[in-house]
Length: 427
Image 1 (cartoon, rainbow, N blue to C red):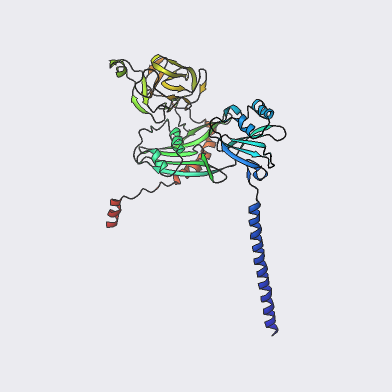
Image 2: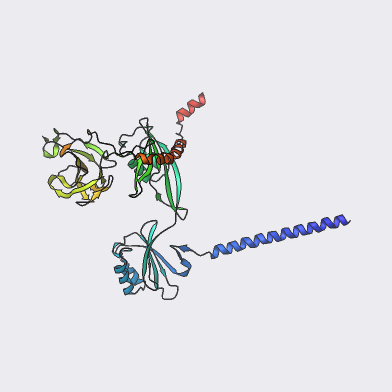
């Protein structure tokens, strides 16, 4: 009997404890719900619950001054922003389509206290009208996620990338990495690539673009070419791409001044030109046909010696690269550089147009060597310097594990054709 009462007592205690535990869990869940409901909404570093919030985008005809006057900001404060904070926020340069947020007081006056202008998806500028006027720039919290991709080319590089739902900018970035070693107008079926890069996300979920490529592998015509991003000058913050032997993938000159242009006319001293009635006139340029507005790139580092318009050349830019080489880019729609400006290889110096004597949109690329125009496609152009020997041990230690990572990336499986599928079943 005593044993029975002992077991009964233990059972009562157990179930009462169990009931208490369940009650505690229930209470805990309810408290969590309340906490979620009452959790403040913080954006741009401000508790939005403290303000009346207005979100909009800049429209045609909007100006910073008018927007602020409409929201009851005193004119002296607006004037102070326009005069004293121009380096931080130039009110004359707000752009149509850019989002902005106005945080207003919660009282009946609803005076604008904070103005937030989104420069891009990550960077924003805050103008604080509370107390004395202040303006500052800030960034949204960004999360970087490493991504590995690969592909086998069936028709084009862009299609191989876009078919996987990958940012188109990766196509552009990959073409830039290999601009000196691969002619992307001559890619072959079954060429392969692998890429490692970082994607940016705002608030863990909003995609904000891709970072420059960290490492890549491209197999073109059966020839493998590795590329690793590496900072070769910590003071100037210069980054180049090197192969597995520390050779610089960059050449002194790009293959062509437009990324996806079509070679439409070569250097030819006996060419007949339709524009001049099919008479023989030397053509000392190399023409690349491209759509109007296509960016034109400087093919090497150098200083702009001319950026003007003259006769049949139309609008053009000429660049002196060193004592030996100069280049010229004709028929531009518009230039993007001025005389005396230093440009780096790949910088956009203008856009394809039809100015001057031309029958269609293209860039005429002229190439000087020792003061004489020559054919750039026949020139043996020097390679860029390899990575300094003093930096190579650190470089190899850095790239070895990344190379292993690239080698382990698997190519996407090629879909089995219906006939192949049937044949495999018959075997």
